[in-house]
Length: 300
Length: 281
Image (cartoon, rainbow over the protein chains, first blue to last red):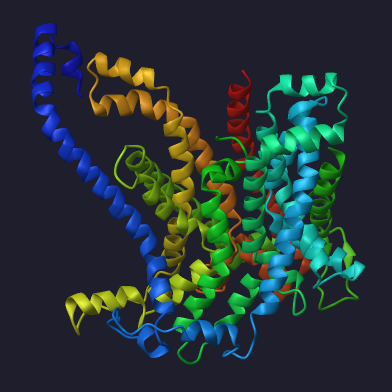
């Protein structure tokens, strides 16, 4: 481990190795178990705020905000029924539906356009394909917030503020670069021989897409879709500025949900959890491809 | 190819160009008759206003510390998860979940259910352990930036961990066998084999994290609404535009953020391009 080990005479070195080999098995097993336990502890530590959120959401408001905390208070679904039944006076459904529409429609648009783009980047290999890829990536590096004002002004001029259409346009553009990068890396894995064989058989492009490329890249397509969905669902800044009542999304609803008076902790936890559920499900389903999407295909 | 490219340019690039133009304009929505072009006043305002300057430092400080802490934690946890143990897949899933909470929800959770001075979990546990006279700190009023930082670290450590884990699992195993045969200890192996291999993954994780965290708006907006000196640049843009309605100043701040991001992005692109070249060779 230290310098003398390397310069030590061979006999000493051999002796050391022998000694450590004798010592190793038992020590190593204990070390392994301890490290496994540590990993479990760290995992539980990271997830504990979420467990607390779940527990609080299942407590009555009076039990949720005690000091010291009442861990074993009776469980109830009151907060959830209050949340959905409009106990706070505002139904969450319009916001949830707006979010779902904006996220799903924009994801579909992104999938179609990005698969086409990825085809010409990965398989057809148009000229300067890597320049195009890096241009797309660079757009993702610029903070979208800097374009907020012009987007707002243009949307105002077209009269599409506070509509699904506007959110769908914004979210599609926001996710397009990631989707193109991901789809490119999935399409690049398709063996070129398969495509050549199809071409020899006289298959046209639409058929190649439907019968060869899509089935082969289905898992990648699903992962791309889930990641686009997550980013659109989470987005707050643009939704907050560009919508007001008609097209307001779930995160915006959540920020306006918190009132400063009264006991509300349990309901806030219930609302936060409900709004996170789609992303949790999508993310855990796509966890193997999550890295690839977040690093824009740079890491497999 | 073209539809996607044109779409991206139209919606994400043209606005930047317009932002640059507006940043040289005198334009406050509250005074619609007093709009003119050709002034540096917005930039002078930005660089002489203490609050705006503070936002620059808040952004840099928050981003650097969150990226550093979550990268180190992410690497440590990735090393833990890289070994075989019972329930490894499950622990990995546990680790990912903080990243999958809607950012607004995570911020609300920490602000109200955990850091709240009278009924949050932290002070509640302090009372449980130390009794009636336990210290009851109010983190969100004394160190609000630390509170925001903790939430960001909680959410971004899983991201760092995932990238580092991918890096660890792409190591060529024969090198390790060779090292073992040569009698290298675990410390040496880590220092001379693992770290050099991981270098590019660490860089990538840090740079991507930087790009996302510089743009963070949700956490600051939800936890403090930019109050108590926590406003970062994205929040200031939002505020100048939406609340103060000073379009010129908002755009000038936007241009500054873009320039800063370009510098970071250049490094990120270089790293991504080396990984791409390796894949193609």
